[in-house]
Amino acid sequence: MNKNSPYYAVIFTSLFSKKVKGYTEMSNKMEKLAKQQDGFLGMNSARNDIGITISYWDSLEAIKNWKQQNDHLIAQEKGKSDWYSWYNVKICKVEREYDFGIITKFEH
Amino acid sequence: MNKNSPYYAVIFTSLFSKKVKGYTEMSNKMEKLAKQQDGFLGMNSARNDIGITISYWDSLEAIKNWKQQNDHLIAQEKGKSDWYSWYNVKICKVEREYDFGIITKFEH
Image 1 (cartoon, each protein chain N blue to C red):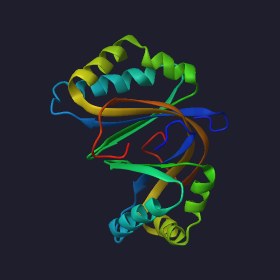
Image 2 (spheres, rainbow over the protein chains, first blue to last red):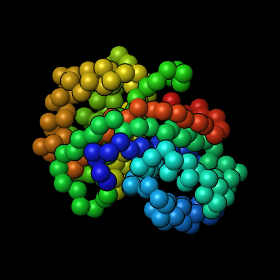
Image 3 (tube, rainbow over the protein chains, first blue to last red):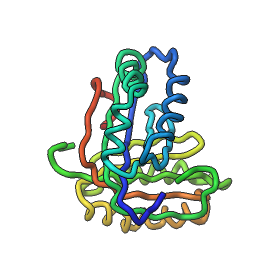
Image 4 (cartoon, each protein chain N blue to C red):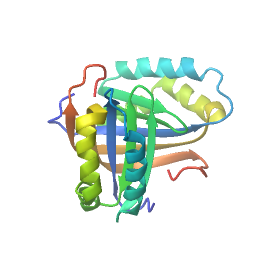
C-alpha cells in the first residue's frame, strides 16, 4: 500500500442471524474476489460477538465497482436474507496512520 | 451518534506478543475511560488472529485528547513494552454509511 496517496477504508460491522449455512464458503469466495478487484489494497477481519471486516481501497470508484460486482451482489442479497440480522457499512477516508513494530503475517 | 455531522473512526489493528499479563484489566479500564472522554461516540472490538478495535469520535481534537490522556499514555507504553508485537493506528473520516436491519445490543 502506498501510504503517501490518500486511500479509503470500508468498515463492515455485522451481527449474525441464526442461519449460517453457506456463509463460510461465500465469505472465502468474496475475499478471493475482492483481492482480484482493481484498487484493492488489503483486508482484515475478526469476529467475536460482533464481526468486523475492514477492506482498503485506492479510490471511491474502486469501492463502488466492488459493491456492484455481480457475484458480490448475490452475496449481499444472501447476507440480507440469511446470514445477518444487522450490519453497518462505513466508507471512510484514511487521513493519517502510524505503526509500532514490524509485521510479517498480515498485509497491514 | 448524530450521523448528520461528520465524525471520525480510529482503526486500531494489532498482533499480540507473548506477554499478556495485565492486558485484560488494562483493556477494560481503557474502554471505560474512553467512554468518559468528551467527543466519544462508540466502540467495537473483535479479535481472532488479529485484533481490531474501532472507536468513533466527533472531532480530531477529541482523538488527540484521548491519545494524550494520562492513564492512556501509560497503557500505550505498556502496550509497546509488553502486549503488542505490532499495531497500526489509522485516523479516518467517515464519509458516509448505511445499515441493514435493527441493532439493539451494540451502539453501532
